[in-house]
Image (cartoon, rainbow, N blue to C red; front, side, top):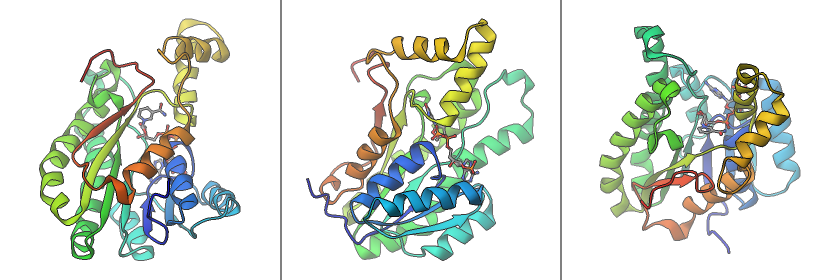
Length: 259
Ligand code: NAP
């Protein structure tokens, strides 16, 4: 299926690894010129080279912290008029809400709610003028089924989800859609580090914990960044203009409800 987006320009945030990288790869393969960022320049450059080697759209890198104002300004300078925006950043740490002070909450809200909102604000009017825009927020299955130890993520991402639900109905008339993809367990560095912590807690090896997490999912495995990227590319396609304000759960069936 030709997704009809060759030649478009995309900003893909937090994309040197994991889910963001999966999105950048799938979009670049479709012929989209991608501007990707991450804080660590070395990993970012290595990833950019690997994506370039796949053929497809051009890859531009911006080493920055996307949760900072300077970081957002730098990526917008490198790609001032994107047709596609994939919002992503590292997730907040797990813990007990009794230990979180105001600064901890502000950092989580900054990274996982306000950063995507400010990037949307910066690009959405240009998309409306050009009559094409696809915005995808990478959030979490915790938006649908909150996880107790991830209170910072539950709270900040719920704020973003509520905000987007309002504006996504305003932009779609101009062929600008805003949707979220909600990852369940995906085999990324972040997932592996969570597995390590859980393994230590239970006194088993990381391999055993990984196998346990995989077996516990209805699919009998965890997802791959490539699978995540493919859905993202479809949501960004020319064909997906009638879908907006949706929260697309990609979790191997782990959420047990019908809706
Ligand atoms: P990952 O494998 O650890 O990759 C994170 C990527 O984001 C790296 O490229 C990292 O590079 C970059 N990054 C992190 N913070 C950044 C910042 N402030 N500015 C710019 N780049 C930044 O993580 P992932 O598993 O793909 O997770 C992506 C998002 O999905 C996170 O918010 C996570 O909470 C959420 N999520 C993941 C899963 C899962 O199972 N994997 C499930 C639910 C939700 P640098 O460190 O060099 O900046």
